[in-house]
Image 1 (cartoon, one colour):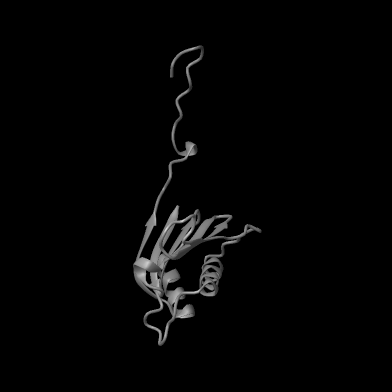
Image 2 (cartoon, rainbow, N blue to C red):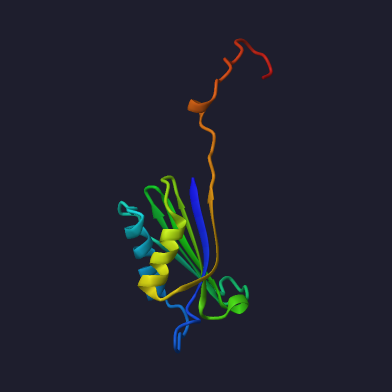
Length: 139
């Protein structure tokens, strides 16, 4: 599993304004194109806050992919209107630095922080499985 997390800002732009839903959708489309991901007809889910009487102002956008997902989170109370957190998780390997550069170049975003990680989950194909005992035994 390959993942990248970035804190992205428009603060370097003249008169940046808040990060909009339109910009988030363009960001996700750029990520999916850059990484050759497909939605296979799966639709994004969007949650806006405050919700259910809770405080704060924010938005969470999640786009499932056939190879995992892309998520964007805004929490204006803590970060201001011009910062978004992007998380990309994929079953396929990708170059997090190249993705970061693409986001900066194409959308005028600045990655002020970020991390990429590779997580390898064990598979039953990778290990020897002991046979289960027969009969009514506690196992």
